[in-house]
Length: 307
Image (cartoon, rainbow, N blue to C red; front, side):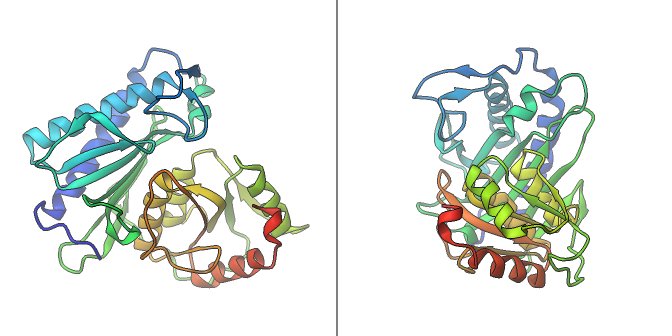
């Protein structure tokens, strides 16, 4: 596993806790409207495949940028480079830093657009920290956070590698989390999550479940949904083309909590490349028994259904 020698590992937890507080404090201050705007091909923040952006994305990106600059200046130079939605931020570089921060400043943008006056569905900041190096692997991830931005909701998941054994320690609201060891299966009365943005994944869900009754959910924020597997609200989560800028955090939290994560070939992700702006077919599950059961069903479905 990758180790951070120059920056204290406890500092990663301090950083993530502070960033969560800053994001949740500033998000309600946004007054520009959440409407979608077209800002052209050379965008920094926005969907990887569309020329659409939210003013709220840019607002949160600036909040994050300001916090990281302040943390590096007052505490110690932890972050070297920021990557927003697959592109390096030209407004931030710290040659003294040690880690690269891969960040989605607003995961589930439509949830933010249509939040209205109520709490609404989850929209979040998703953060993945890696050792600063070319071509990092999943095992080079050293910290992660998923920060719920809804007003009045203070939930945030975070994780960092421990100083002694280098294992991931995940937290929900500063409480250490560990997945129940109960051998759940796909036939149990549990809540299962599926990404519903992609039509290929909707077809996969129908083929996977058939006429089976069940408790299947999608709230819009993939980061929150994957984090919920780590803390037990969801038993599993499946997507045939998940963006790695969210999957890095989800993998780190779920694996750290004792869960099971594989791609659709059944391979672990540890030695696979963490290419921030790419996609991967993935299954996250609370237990190996559940994960293996879902994997067997997925592999029995013709690839043309979900590709």
